[in-house]
Image 1 (cartoon, rainbow, N blue to C red):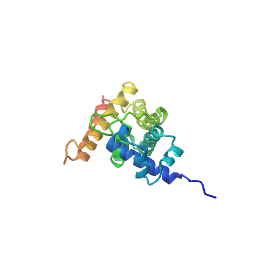
Image 2 (image 1 turned 60 degrees about the vertical axis):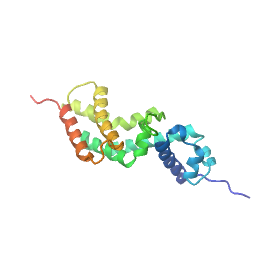
Image 3 (image 1 turned 60 degrees about the horizontal axis):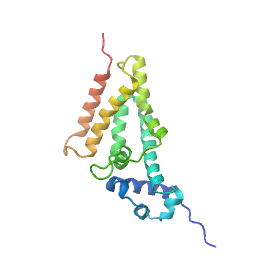
Image 4 (image 1 turned 30 degrees about the vertical axis):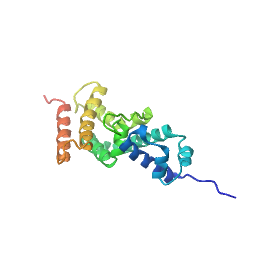
Length: 195
């Protein structure tokens, strides 16, 4: 009697990793399940068995990225905004394919990846930033502004620089120094004025 094929967590992880890399290189529209399965050294049956199909696989990749990103942000949260900013860059540099897929810049130039995350998972990944800003405003350390405005302005600063770095916009630039200067500028811009 033949034993059923078991698709375990190791196969699932390989499929997610290969899918993220292929999407980063080719864009989601060009990735085939056959390519993903071959890259993960398994069959397309494993993809269907574990995920259901291509759309579900890509959504799982994005959701997994936001989950991992959220874990890194929660681990840094006690260090405040500066630590969250450092953790943001470190995570993006360690996971460039996932970062580009999560934020819509994977694939060929001019082509958006259009793989939407589960809203609750994406929102949870940004909760440490939102919480740090809210706590800073309550304590008087950060200037008052609508919370959503502050979140998007601060997030936009770090996200923009990380995206430029990953796109190799200025080869040879000292991105670590540039990023540190930007984090200092954000802190100064949002500090409550002393009287």
